[in-house]
Amino acid sequence: MNSTLVMQDRETDSYWSLMHEEVVAGKLKGTKLEELPVGVKMQWKDWVKLHPDTKVLSVNGREDAPDVYEDYFSSPLGFRNTQAEDRRLPTKQPIFAFKFKNKPVAVPHEFIEGGKVFDTGSGEKIFFYRPVGAPKFFSTFAYVTRGKGFVKNSEGKWQDIDSGCLFNEVTGVFEGGNGECPQRLGGFDTFWYNWSLNHPDTELLGK
Image (tube, rainbow, N blue to C red; front, side, top):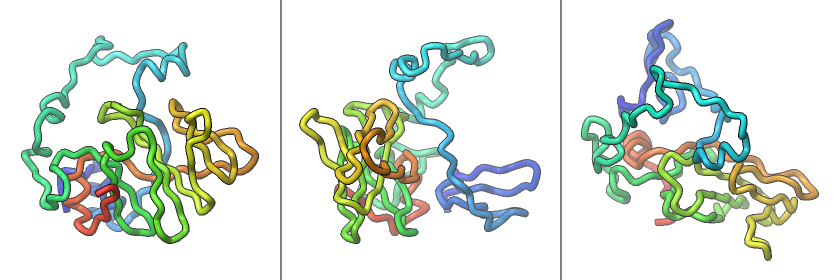
């Protein structure tokens, strides 16, 4: 297990692994984590268009706090110089990682910019979306359907064929249409070494 991806709580002295989605040591060992869609990462220019009355919290009195992760993001190595053992991708390749039918899966960001649909071969279609040229911190949006799938319509917008729901590229939500819109697929953005060290049996899409 990659110990750099574990959080510790002071109340029970338990260690919570984000990559394994459960408590791996301590009083609460074995407790499963529940994913909660509490927010979306997006660029400020897009957020302020949606919420022009947003208040900006300061950090020690500054709104323009320095980026403490600058050196980490610029380095080809992971935390404390960790490297990926799985060489299918570079150590710091940005990916979207998720579990599908209890199996670990990952797809590199570069393959899903502008939208991409994958057929699972078992009846489901998965739609991924990232804006072209989006920064690393931008959220990847993923949706799954057992219907006909997803296509770009005549106006260049991604659409769920069965429901007619259209994908909003800013909010990352399928909306409108004349039926139930697709449900979002759980997962998160990370670097290849983070995920692959914890899930060596990962299926890699797009490669």
